[in-house]
Length: 230
Image (tube, rainbow, N blue to C red; front, top):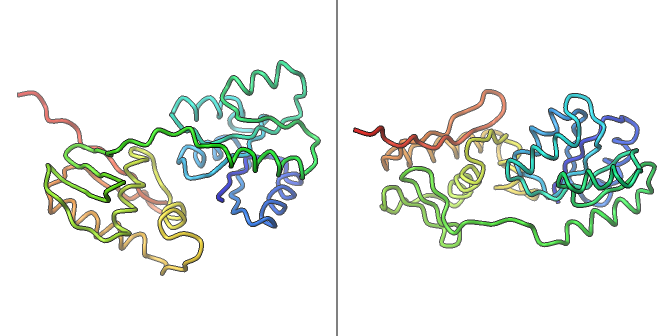
């Protein structure tokens, strides 16, 4: 499981991160709200552990922003605010569970496991589209203007992930994790090579959208604009 920890307290964050990693979780730790939102908004995590009192962007605003953007990743809030009204505010903002500080790590772990067992509140469309491009996840079929496009399995998986996050910047690290997984050690430039091949296939098929490189970070899929009215 891939977890995002957003916590500005160095000592607490280090304890939580090391504790979770000792149970086999992969943890990305962000220490301010702005960086935490950028990471969480990719939708690349199985759960988020969120402190509500953060520098940069308040945790409640961060949570509301995620939910407004349609990110349904389970969120466990951590906070020193123990009043009932504060807990209700967090839950109404979109939190899935709430744990007040100080807490026992064993309780955090139990609540996290309970969240991860819940069915994800996601609606997965049967077909993902971007202009003339259509991708059917169940059938693993890609078409451009109705014409079937052959592509390698990894190219398909990268395209599917970018389509699910169209308009958002997806890091190379996230693509490696989601497409190649934990158990492999692909060569350093495998993401760039795969995206380059994918671009060539789509361009040759006549797709007018773009997969743009974000320097030193990753890629963003841009949906083509509809043609202007004559």
